Image (tube, rainbow, N blue to C red; front, side):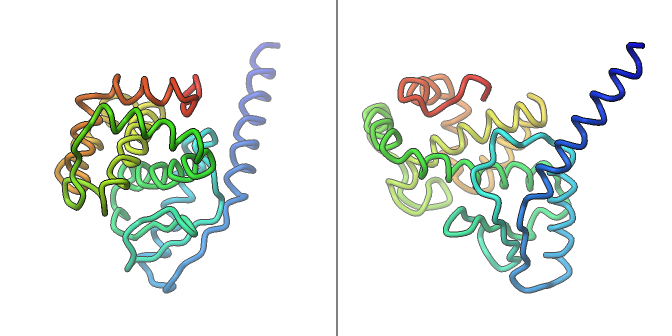
Length: 198
């Protein structure tokens, strides 16, 4: 009796995951083979991992010529077509930007605390983001990206992804997230920008 019930529950959970993933609108900017492969890869990842708690927008564009960004449409490049973990982490990173835009007033208050904690930050790449303000917001985004990666990929793979990013882009930001995770997290908790299951 228990096995049929468990099987039924498993089938229902798979069906719900498949239905929720099917609601993404993924378009290709240039209709190239790398973009098509990245779309297939992303669809496979979305069917494999339960990213539901990290979804804030369902419109996604794949543009092999773009640097990944969140607005106005979440855009991914084809750079990580051979690395599932890096693509998944990038996808979650861009989704998290939407979280902070949606909660802009809380974010503004949290940023005041973060600026008091870190008086000077890099204002350009590769250490920082495009300017000082963007570097501060990326401390929050990259911190939540790390938490998401840990939940999705496990501690070891999440740490490997973060360590790769420390040598790739936002190098100071990612190093700081690894070194000061507790401090950054406490600011997000204080300002109600982090859910308990994150």
